[in-house]
Structure formats: C-alpha cells, structure tokens
Length: 174
Image 1: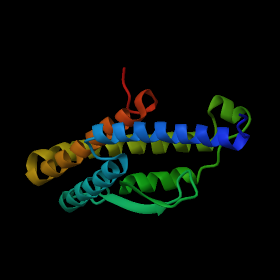
Image 2: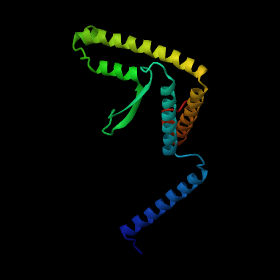
Image 3: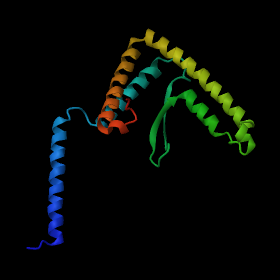
Image 4: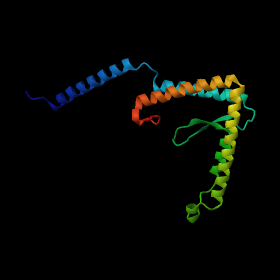
C-alpha cells in the first residue's frame, strides 16, 4: 500500500501537534508564577506610583520625574520617564553638531567641548539627586515604602525573564 504525500504530511503534522500540546500542558501545569506581560504591567503600575510619591515630596522640581511620549528606537510611541534635568540636558545634546574628520578623531572642536560641559552638568545634577533621594528616604517613610514596593516587582520581573529566556536573558548572571 502506497501512502500519498499528503497523508504522510498530515500524519507528521498530527504527531508534531500532539508533541507540542503535550509539552504545553506540562509547562502550563508547572508554571505557577505570573506571565511576563503581567509582571511588566505590575512593574509599570508600581513604577508610576513611586514616581508620583517622589514628585509630591521633592522640593527641587528640576529633580521631579517627567513622562513624555516619544518614538525611541522604534516606530511605536511609548512613554519615557526621566528627571526634568535629564530631559533638559538631552535637548541640549541633540543640538550639538558632531565633529568630522580630524576634529572627531582627536576630540577637538566646539561640539566636543560642549558635550563635555553637559556631561559635567549631568554628573553634578545626578550627584545632587542621589543626595536628595537618600535624605528623602530617611525623612519620609511613605517614599521608602513606595520605593520598596517598586523594587519587589522589578526583581520578580527579572527572575521571570531569566526563567523564560535562560542564558539569553539580559538579567542572566553566571
């Protein structure tokens, strides 16, 4: 008896579908934790709650978080949240023309020196942010609670990412 090629293909397809269903049922039974998308949603909710608490308590509004919609490196718009001083310094850096030729090779020219100035500004503001943040954590227990509630889902997301992607996860450590 000769089997038609379609019959052989359909038997192979049924076998593959059966194997896939068997592997899915085993993993669905063993997966007790939340999915990656649920972990991301929980992380974003806690992040925004933390940023709102931080913005209410911070005295220097240049250190407050601002969220803006932008394209980033894709064609999809999404929300990016940075401190106000970071948005300002990013805008200054975008205005620089990049040096070409020997100026680029040796790091000389107007753009290079302007970039170094903004880099120093950023480092100074970030140092003042760290100091203010540490003082606020000591003075305001609500910020401390909010920060800890933000860190827990972040760590859960990182563990879930490693569990799903293994050594290909950006959070994987030897």
